[in-house]
Amino acid sequence: AQKVTQAQTEISVVEKEDVTLDCVYETRDTTYYLFWYKQPPSGELVFLIRRNSFDEQNEISGRYSWNFQKSTSSFNFTITASQVVDSAVYFCALSERYSSNTGKLIFGQGTTLQVKP
Amino acid sequence: SAVISQKPSRDICQRGTSLTIQCQVDSQVTMMFWYRQQPGQSLTLIATANQGSEATYESGFVIDKFPISRPNLTFSTLTVSNMSPEDSSIYLCSVTEGTGSYNEQFFGPGTRLTVL
Image 1 (cartoon, rainbow over the protein chains, first blue to last red):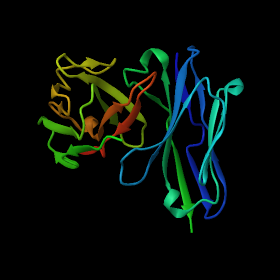
Image 2 (tube, rainbow over the protein chains, first blue to last red):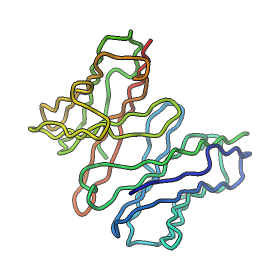
Image 3 (cartoon, rainbow over the protein chains, first blue to last red):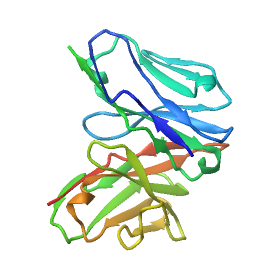
């Protein structure tokens, strides 16, 4: 069965520190898709990244970077030089091939990140 | 990306009543989805709403409790019926957009429901 685990419930850092949010997933499918979303206090879900299972290249976007490792079924998210505006709940999500066109995302429990000034 | 709006943004309701949530998209989309996020919890898919057919519900969700309409390719409604405090949640509309082997998925701003 598919499952997404975000073991870190809450993380607190001081501004400018680097922080890594962990995501471990389970799936039997060989083709799947992984996502990260940000949910600020206002409640909306902001799409950050999608990664296909056949593309293990790490990605960097500004202060954000993602490390995808199929060998450990992990898709970790690092924020470099964190800022107060990064404070939010971050969700990792999985979609398997058979559900890729149905929109069914399996979400992790989320990690609450607090960045203190 | 598609721009999604939801009405109302929040509401406080009495138990036993019903609330209809609207989701409007600025472009035509084939598939629309409704998710629920209970307080402090993750998101769970309620149902998939396709235009011209009945909604497909996930395990644990039934049409009598969460009737859904999809009258056209840019609009959908979700009704939370006979509400109880356990229905207090954020309800989010979502759409997929794009072509190819996978569509991007975007979420609306959510409707924050409190049931007293």
